[in-house]
Length: 261
Image 1 (cartoon, rainbow, N blue to C red):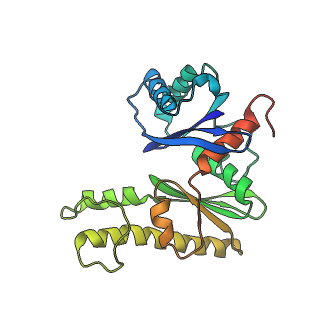
Image 2: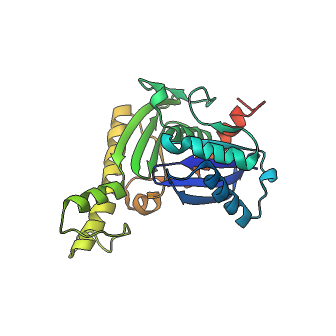
Image 3: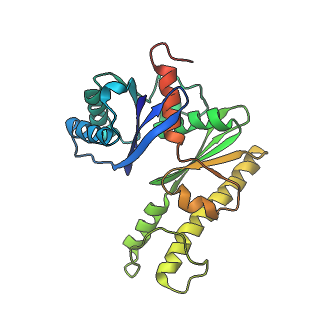
């Protein structure tokens, strides 16, 4: 069993997997907190393991992916304090098996790299990957298994917060399935615009990508808002909530001492 941690701007996804079959033992979400120290993170992680009756000595190792540099060192130290072992960090120099064709490959976010590893392993190529969190990111892998790049769109929550912050008469609302498309009240109209608007944006971007590539691809979505937005899209899109832990587990196996290439 290994410990997998993915740090995003809003949440930390913390869990354990079994590398022999990529089974997710458990997965929990924590709030990303830049104020916490390494020992505070270690205590938090230990408490969660205790809830699942997992002992640190039952864990063979750990891997960390972080898109939030100010908190990366504290979380890595917390993981190593908990496990008593070095933790692999996703970053430059790590073995991935992904052919990255960006202008500057070092600019590829760790979370996008992890998603690409999992996506290629499970769904093959060509592939469009959607990660719907603080931002909605779109990654494109062509039919030659090359990571070409993609797009970054304001996430549904970020867009909604920007709207309510700059429009004095609009209230804060929950992001949930609208009761109908054409709403007869302000809250309903905001929900419709947020959910159907993001879905329409995704459908439109898929069409443009397919046109640019000259062929269609498999499309897979993950991230906290995928379950709300994707069912409203017109294209066939697979929702896979386990992309990050799967990808981290594959990368752990590739990069541990004696691991598979």
